Image (cartoon, helix red, strand yellow):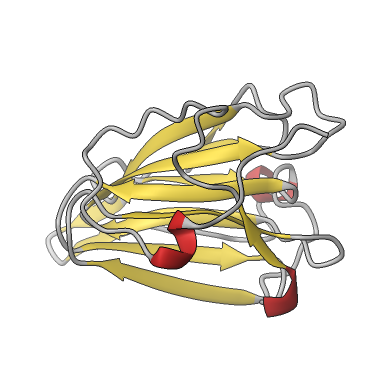
Length: 180
């Protein structure tokens, strides 16, 4: 059973999973394309790639990433180990929430995930050492269309919860957000 939480940003959903447990351990169904909850959120998108990100140090930031048109992609993000503070930024100029961001605490203990639609940027900060994140993508990676927004852009005022311990040079030099 999955509970779907709608958010103020259209197309962004938090999934809260129920877990089956017995004396062997537990079983959590992460995705079934034929179930109504996924049909109503993920729709008929394909899953084109699945990626896992391992992050050694608490306070590390990755993001804010997205792919430009015509290679936009939707994502489902979940934390398999540790805990992250996950951020979604609406970059769709015609959206009523354009330029706004939301955050979610994701962890296996919370049994949750976030779905991010096309046209939104994504990033996260690790809240625990040795955090492992899984991403389901609707599109294939297109390096020439890779883009992002700087994580610490004052115009966005994203309130990262921890002091930054690690960030790539590439993410530190992403462009600032510009309203169109």
